Length: 369
Image (cartoon, rainbow, N blue to C red; front, side):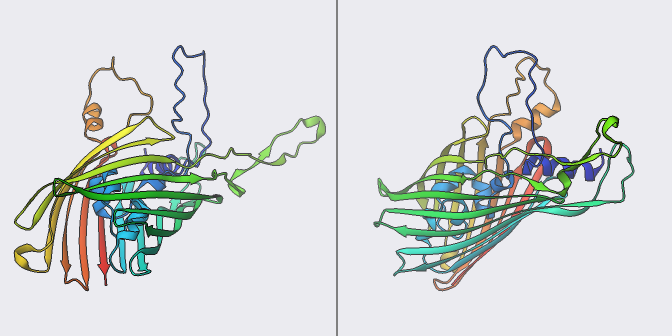
């Protein structure tokens, strides 16, 4: 398969830009109502900063920086000063996803507002058809973007909540779709046996459906020669598809602290609308001030499980692809920071394995003032 064809297939999978259908030869004996492949705008799940990518779903309970705008809007209220994060994700098949967000606390630090922008895509790819296997001479581009506005507030010294309103804009060639969505999150933090414990709850991408229109959906329809020989111009109608809504609960606990460093363990449960329930576990070591200096470091890793799309391999012969699938969901990373109390500069990196799709890399930069 040509690389450009692989990119097109990937874009169709991530953006759900094709119109899926269901074909059944006979009624299943054990029907499964899980909505596999029924959502659009899958790029909304690609994440934000590298720290969240390395920790996966459990980061919902730990997000207290600018990337909280994406992972848990309630965490934006826990940011102590203005902060911005930008990151870029080297994704599969030479595609790229980028995210940026900035948070501004106000009201004495009890409230915060923030904005975020995420974008995925590629451009100027050749169009191949069965009739023109070497290319038609035309090109196409993919551009998928979301923009969000967040408000968060601390309601007590232990509890905060946040709400994000966002627009989703999907463009594949000349076909496009728009949707609107809300993210809601809460954060609870306290102490257990003298160690911090944190809990996060989120409901994300709850909104309208994506329905596509544009000239790429125009078709010339042959008609009966008794009524003429010229085809009739028509427009393919598309069904609106839901966004990938996800309910998630996460819990994090500082298990150990020693010599100015901490080890935090975290876990999460999630229920998406396009898959069965999943879970994740993560661990993070952090040292805020190495040797009493403003420099800090962190090492982190996680495993996040998402069920396969209704594929039963129990009777299949094990292959190398089975091993690749078993590794999917593993992520590791680390970061370095410089924090004087009035100025913060941090760099983070994450490596996430995508099974048969291979490895991906996320790098992000954070600045606080």
